[in-house]
Length: 251
Ligand code: 13P
Image 1 (tube, rainbow, N blue to C red):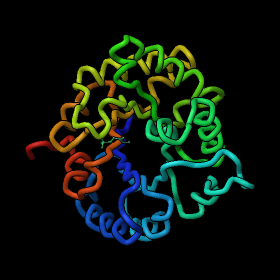
Image 2 (image 1 turned 90 degrees about the vertical axis):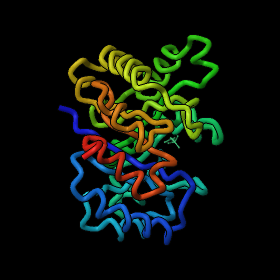
Image 3 (image 1 turned 45 degrees about the vertical axis):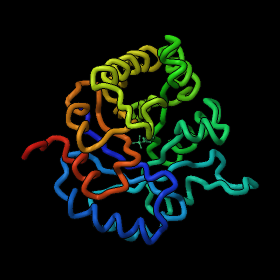
Image 4 (image 1 turned 60 degrees about the horizontal axis):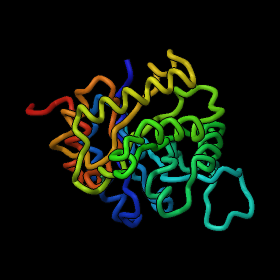
């Protein structure tokens, strides 16, 4: 019922030229995908990426958006600026932005509401640190991130949630498929209680954190996991394509 969504988060990798070349390499490999495919590129790569993606089945995503429509916010980018280039998705509240750039649940909430009202689909990232998991605080952290970060959203099924345990990002230490499924199941229950049970059934929840060609099929086989947000493995066309083809392992 929920269409799977595999999104690459390039983070701060690839110049515009390198990014366009990567897109050209990915396009033919995923043309027959059975899921939504997205690449979230650095802001300055967007024009070249938009050009390279023309006519393909891959959607364009950004990695952040400001909450104001315009104004004195040096260095920031508005939803309209993204939309002019055909951007459809935007990552909001990635743990790297929370950790290094002062992103809070409050700013995540403002950015998410602005993205939605501009017609962009936010990919809202949540997840606990290793310390929080080991301290038994995972559910408490997720509760707060959902209650505060997603406050005031009219239709929660219009966003994509990315569950990214911080301890699994870029570490090679993937959550087991069971761990990811259990936590995403918890997130869905929480969304049902804060918003509505029907919307919780509709909202797509991705897993992110060291997802790769080798573990994508087992993660995606889990009933609660609707997709992946892929960092490192999205930078190589064959690896990203293999994840997009999670449903065809061994074929
Ligand atoms: P890695 O796939 O490199 O662990 O990164 C995950 C991530 O942060 C995607 O947003």
